[in-house]
Image 1: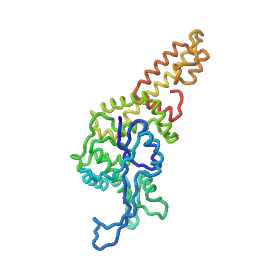
Image 2 (image 1 turned 90 degrees about the vertical axis):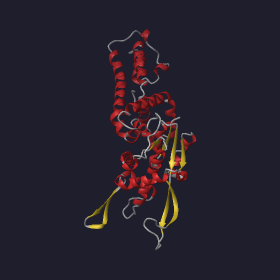
Image 3 (image 1 turned 120 degrees about the vertical axis):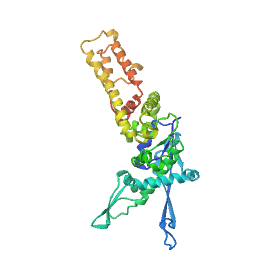
Length: 369
């Protein structure tokens, strides 16, 4: 059973990411952190380092609306939402929290950048990337004129995600995130001198989850138009292709290990997929196009003996493009030629990347593959 810890943004606008992950993983544990809403109390004895605050409420980072959307995945035992309330018992937590705090302070520009105006120190420009802006709008409030921006919350939010990710990966778990900001921090985690003796490579031959996620994204850019039930039905129907795809990714990752560590493969997966995996997928798509369009052009020179026609029935025609089926039905394609065509298609379908082709056909409504 292929498992992963999912530590990422879990709001109503992040539903597509968990859909994509469900096309591959058998079990996904969504890690749910909480942040406390507090107010600072006025007290002469308090310090900046240890302020006295009053708890006013709690914010769950996996929103209620998100939970409602993923009910199907929970019911099918593919997804479970796991509370992090007990992580305080982990002996690594204090060290992980300190590392996360230092990384946030050192690489704060990944989540926002504050520039003071030379003419007036009280006026600042704030550059916040779209992802962090979405998180603020979901949990704190909008960016309308006159509204208050809580930069501290943004830092606490990503600090919480980063702390959880470091904790789980340091315990040897497979971890997945679709957050670009968190992924950028994790690339710093690979290089930061403070934690070179702390980080731990994941053990075993399991494929890096972020590599899997970015490979799947090649094929399903329009998955938001499809309900979870249809996504799971597609996965069920493509079981054999999924198995071959998993084997293909294992081989692909094994060949990468000469130049990349496991964590580098996981956190640099976007560029690895773009430059090393995507060309192979495009080549497979070209081969499919070639056999689809070369068959009619080579057979239109003459009609074949009617005794060689194959009726337009039977499992041999499953998946055959409509125009080829039509030519067969009117006698423009011979039985032997069709069998040769089917054999070539079957050879292509055995390619491990064919699972991505089948997803592309399903979720982008393309024909002819």
